[in-house]
Amino acid sequence: MDRHIVKIAIVGPESTGKSAMSAYLAKHYQTVWVPEFARGYCEALTAECTWQDEINMFYGQLALENELLPQANKLLICDTTFITIKIWSDEMFGQAPPEVLELLPRHKYDFYLLLNIDLPWQDDPLRNFPTKREHFMQVWHQELQVLKANYVVISGIGQPRYDAAVNAIDGFLKI
Image (spheres, rainbow, N blue to C red):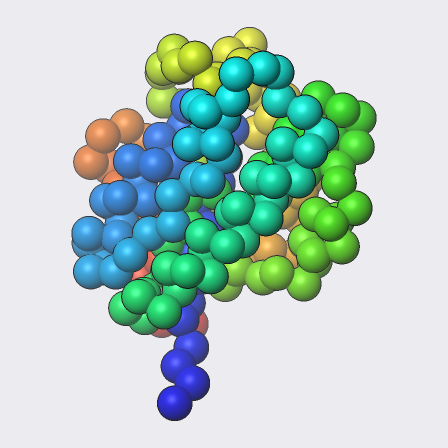
């Protein structure tokens, strides 16, 4: 029996609480969440990230999502998507891998929560652009608009931020 799983993507610039939000939403909706593959991958790197690393992260994110999809309970919460690979590749290398560009318009998520940059910056060895948060927020808006994605911006700090995300998802599910 084929069952439709609603895919919710939690996206946004660095240090906007995507992982914490994903874990919270998965617990709230009693489902699984797909962690960001790139985080573990980059933690294991012993040199600067290369073009091939970006491609590897693209395939790793897809594989992880496909692996966890059967475990989802009506919703699959995705801590980022491979749009991040496009955005990072554009920034670091001036272009994105063809594999990413080819699949991007076809690999759909039902609803996106774009987390706002109103949280304080949290330093982390894998974060690179504390002074470019506004820039990346605009890039995220542009990328989601190009995809004609159904998305809302989630703002606030602490529980109000989580409540806004739940309200947005609940509102979307009633459509």
